[in-house]
Length: 345
Length: 262
Image (cartoon, rainbow over all chains, first blue to last red; front, side, top):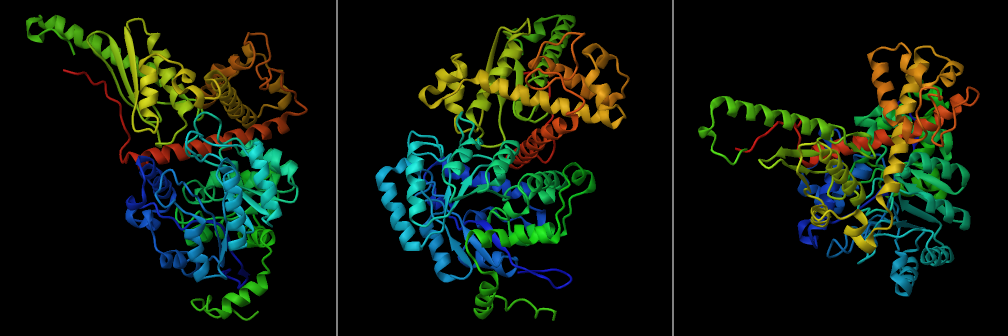
């Protein structure tokens, strides 16, 4: 919950969070070590100095730390847990649905649990997806098209096998497909930033929503073009958002383009926790305005109404969250006990 | 650096040799300065990627470089190594070049391929599914677009109208009075102008990626379209520099020195 100076309450859904274990004990090989180190470099490079963590804490944080960072010191009301398996690098996986499920179980009103699949896992993978969807009542999945599987160094959503899985997901009631299309890890030589396969599946699966995490950066131009054509393509701004601190001028450009091409109803906030924490991101985001020299190019303005949509209302719509009812649930569970009483309207 | 015993040489010869070594070191770094990260369109030297560039007694050049993350795309890595090798080989005194990439997930594979003079495709075999020339071309076109939009913005900023700008020939662009900043942007643009179409004095200075001349009536829409190319590039550049500085803890900028092995 974020309260403005004038007392408006903004309901916040964090579209991109992780409960991972990147500790040395869980690392399978040098790749596991390098993977968490790369994340740590992102964290160290883009966080304000006061927000920087020790490496050990970053490698593996506990559930309480995460809860406090998101909901107590942070302004999140709810958070979507997006899994990243990486079983080739980590003994028990990096950030699996099962691991995230423990968080969901402890705080059912605060978390939305997403699953994952990989079309290269064949019929066994389809069975697993069925089991996962039924067990956790999944509404969303996170896909990582550049993930390794043995000899394979990635896949495309437009592959025949991907279609099978998307059809299955649709039947299982999964509506939201979050696809990592951003600064990539492990691209070999296919242009792993390529967003063209989103275009293909968004047209074929009109009833699914495709949330392009990290808005296709550094392929924002291609992404905007596709998202403009397709009504069911959204932008997740995790990774783009922390630039608000180190390069606000650049962040202004990105927001200005996204608002111009996609409009305020198709942009979703995400912290990418534990790489960054919600408090400072949202403080800066709420204080942010697109400078005039940038907004004159696109006419985009980051109004309070737009910020409210980006921070929570858009995700609420995609996940069928009734904001007022959810606030009541959270309040009843003592979730707002740390806040001062609201200013009477 | 020399295999001979320095003290047996007359002082004058020793100094001359020292001067030649320094001159070659400087030439070598100058040459590497012209090699770009294909995606960022910035010099690999300015980006702090090159950690070593030495000449030995037999005029072989030894280059070592590193990248912002362990995961940087293998094809970009290979392309940069290949570009460095090509650039340095063109220096007439160079007898051989070795380029070695450090701390990268594919370092062993890439280094073995480079040492044997293999192509990217030969190095990675079935895992590679595209050739480097297409990639090179893609990034040259993007560099052309970025450099063009920077120059167009500058020219518009100093009061030239779309009509004037789109009517310029290459010769006229070269003769246009501009300040130092404008001249820098102009030189950068001209260096990539022939990527998309033949660059002769009498042809239009400004063409699009397909080689068609820009028109005054669609000028502002065209420029907005190019803006996003620059936004992407800036994202990459900021991220790469930041990640590199964290990864190798660059508290102070890395200054390449003309080092000479004793």
